[in-house]
Length: 635
Image (cartoon, rainbow, N blue to C red; front, top):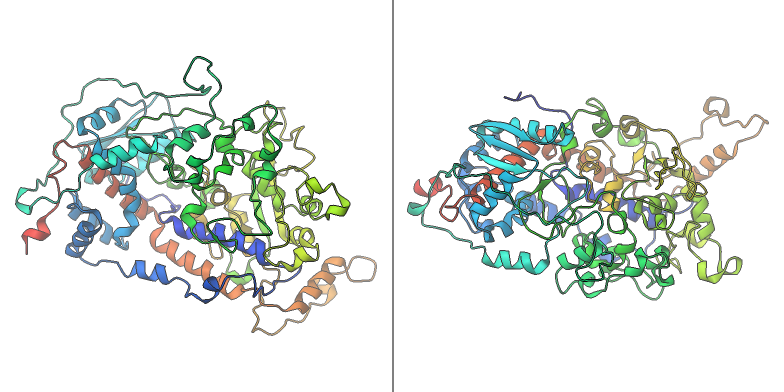
């Protein structure tokens, strides 16, 4: 039914490499000076300086298996069950497509499907079949159920269609919205997990074939959707913040669960201490934020989990006001391209990366410039989306905050000392959406000399293409944010990747939109980690290059003297400080090499193939006895 040809772009099959990009951005922004990098020996914690880079990663790769028997053994050890029916064919497909087989790589599947082992199988099958948007596989061929043509449905259908001949009969219900939709209370999920049994039947009792889907009927279900206008249960019907669902989905011992909902954030008159800039960490300069190592990210899982950051309820568009809202606290199978840590969807590769659109892939041929040729710039283009920003809530949106923080003019206002501004707003940007940490806790030279804004302005090129007002104003500008942001034209991703250091804003914002995260694509470009050092070609051990003659380098300002730009460039060359450029190059080039190994279209197929084998088993009445045991019988 479908052509087996492979689309062009890659997928972020392993997210930790992409998350390194965001962490690198944050670290660089905190450790570079005005004009040149500098050592900060007292600020960088010794565990980061002294520990061997990549030790955990190398240990993970050491788990690669190279035979079917070893793969089945690794599966049983990690999952506590026999592999699913079809495992041998899946393994052969994986090897034939040149993929690494490391069982840990598939943990996401078992996190997503785990609670369903506590739900009666027929109920799962019937719910999946009765959903409004479904991709079905029957007898090795896919079909769609939808209301009209939907790009994401078509792309996922195409992806599943390339492996349809290998798949069992399944119904795959699809979330067609941008936002994640399932937020099941933590206690409910915990009950399902407690009911789920990990059984390892004797090989002689194992059933090697699935039952199929012959018993489905036309039953319907109440999905318990809430939205777009949600109210608290009870007689007063007060508006209920989306964060209340998030909070209930967090574990009881997490900070978000222990912190009340700031309901005033959604009112016309929020409390002063709940203003956007004041919700940011306030422990500086007496201490560093909790769960960090002297201010540096120590636990990436916690750093990106809203359950550990109750202040995010007023600092992120998803929680402040989503564009569309339809949420259920009921657990049923629903597949989607992204989710937040506490959501309950079953993840598929983001649909847009099964597309050859240059908007998302950057094009087939371009993989960016070699590291030494990368421009010393930070580039970002996009719209002021991520939620419905209004006059009263726009300072709470993550995209607005990011662009303010990399805008030299706005940072210059935040740099003004208390004697020159009202002490109550010292360190706060003019848009009221960010605050410089007091006391320069990271020891950044540019900050101590109040040149942070000059330095940021020297490399940053981050702009909105549309300010996306609400209500709309029939223009890309916006009356309530025009004074803080300018609007510019689009720059194709291919051009961004080829010329500049692009910023994956998806990585920086932990949002739930399906097609926004550019991780896999960026990892496939040489130097995809933003290269912001002002002395791009230089490493500490290299000789200082001679400045180019003015007539050849266009350094003249037209008045017979050296232009400010050329003078600044000359002074930068003379600084000759170690900017850790070599370490950054290694991170970027190793990331690209890894992406070419495991972030391919074939890896999307391998992941979805494995996912649907497991999903088909959890939907089967005989799931406790289903499995692959041929390797055990051969012993």
